[in-house]
Image 1 (tube, rainbow, N blue to C red):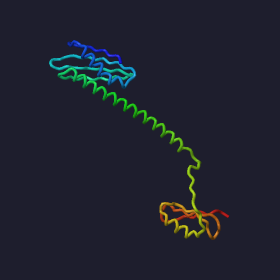
Image 2: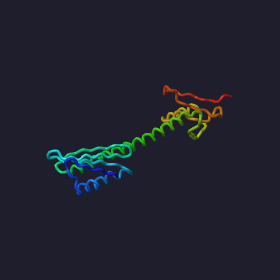
Image 3: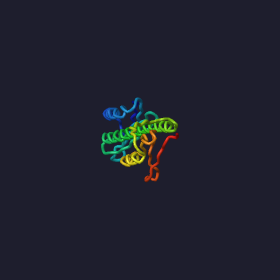
Image 4: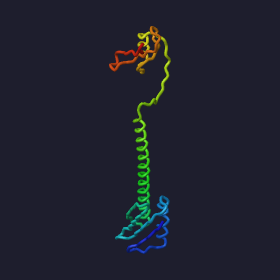
Length: 175
């Protein structure tokens, strides 16, 4: 990380310089390359630390004042770290959401495919009368139809519930 420390109406001592560099290591771990501009100044009884961090085309800024310069620097670092974490979380969420949207588009394309068998169900077909098939279908309220062999004709028939929910239909093959 490139660090530029400036003091306004304040002499930057080696202790302050080392402290700032040590604290900025917490920020440096989030980026491969970053630049920091640190401005330290005093106004009346307040010690003000202003830190700008530029990395990956984004800028982060924190300004705090305290009676103690070291405390002011600590607050700035905490603020910057929070901003960076929030930004990274937001980016990760956007990436995740965009991949979900891509998945949704793919599933919509799949649902647009028609005339394909997408599910196969197997039923046991027993010989019975159509009236018995209706009674059997009434025993299973979640089923909408029942396939059976019509005892009278020997052919496969289907009894199904009509939309009115009270009556039933019978499907028989011709001939």
